[in-house]
Image (cartoon, rainbow, N blue to C red; front, side, top):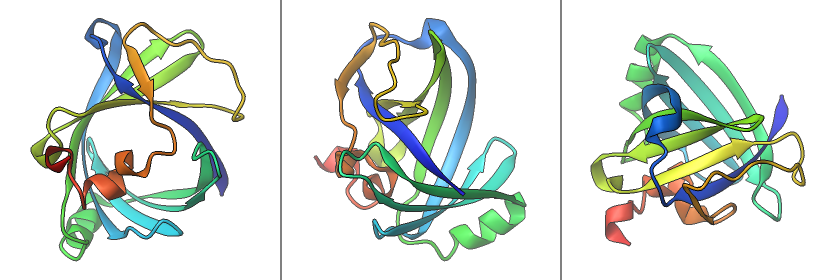
Length: 155
């Protein structure tokens, strides 16, 4: 059990030349209330269940618990998830000492690309590559659990 600390940004430029690895992710939510989101996801060939708590005032930090579960169990749980599925490719991009997770969305969120960097503290310094755009840390409409309810195409 740990707190996750991350900052989130829109992507404004081409990051693709620096991609180290990429994986397709499909996920749904059993609960999307901010106090306790419960997500199931298939990431590549693995399945996961994740529980997240409410975020800090800045939105950069929140409780997170995750456990690997069989893909077949995720597929069953997806059948009872709240309406809407998140479909994206996660690109891992190195920038200085940190690895950004750049999520390129598909389906109803097509056209949205966001980058997250995980930090050890909210005030940790990190490199900001030229393709990084506006910071959206703490803006709830960019949370995956909200993109499921109010997709990017409806903004």
